[in-house]
Length: 469
Image (tube, rainbow, N blue to C red; front, side):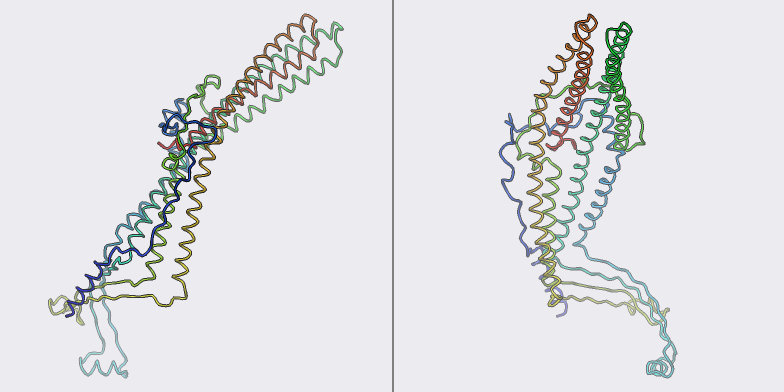
């Protein structure tokens, strides 16, 4: 009869095992718009689908990125988070297995001779102390009737996958920052070169004005203004050199090395701006962007937590068994089968009153799940907004560069003409100084706009989910 009862409990557990008491909340549909703002996609293909080394083909940038992926500390922490989550996931996969515990114990006690235990012990055994030797193997198993263990496993899996998406997000941001940092370095190199060239031009102008002053053709005011223009150009050089060193230090830290000089094998004017930058359709972001995938997995975790919290309100079935050898004398400990013992029990526990803790836990889990849905919506909107921003930058910076390039060419010709006219006495020194100052600013601005173009292209690649593959 006892055996029948135990088998009945086991059968009950198997019948109800896997039952779910909670309903998962699904992701909201149709969040992404049909197309990005100011974009007419040719097809579903996207620049974000391109492998990293197909999109960035500069070998120096590739080498810097490769170093950063290995040595960057944020990247290393992301990898360690994956390792930790994998350990927890492997642990959760063992949730269906029973717990086994081996216990070996020995004890000796001597009750008082004047106590009831002491008098009884002396009367029946003729001894003044009790010895007990025990060795047993215990089994503890909880049936997953309401899907609690299954939800714990699902939550651990989603958390593990979340860490992988977090690593991808760190990598995409790292790739973008390294590439943009390198382009900024090339920009500073180009601006420094222009500043030095402009300083030589100012030196030449100042020498001519000094000769004219000696000949009585100009006043000391002309010399003073020319010197001020020359000092302005000279001041720009150490400032740019400072920025170069700071940018090299920042890039070194980013790739996980001590601050050092960064090798440059290319020039900014040799960097080509990609022209065919198809963004595809916004719906593809849901499967490509790591932050959106992470938000989606966060809902899986939240669903699992709700399932675990709700299952805690229902009865739990626990079956325990233990067996081994036991003896009051060490000499009889291994006297088998006389020293063998065994115990099997099963029990159902139903929480009744726990001061509302279980219900509060369930309600909090539901609220957290609702927050997760809101965060998912926000992540989609942010992603679409970032892509729209970068598309706008790419388009408008292209127009700005065309205008700035024409202006720079015009001012280059104006500066040459002003110098020729000044030497022939047909233009005054103010026209020359003004032309040179305008040329310097236009060339610096042209370089800045080109760097912004390169950065916008990289930003578009990252916002479309590229950089982790």
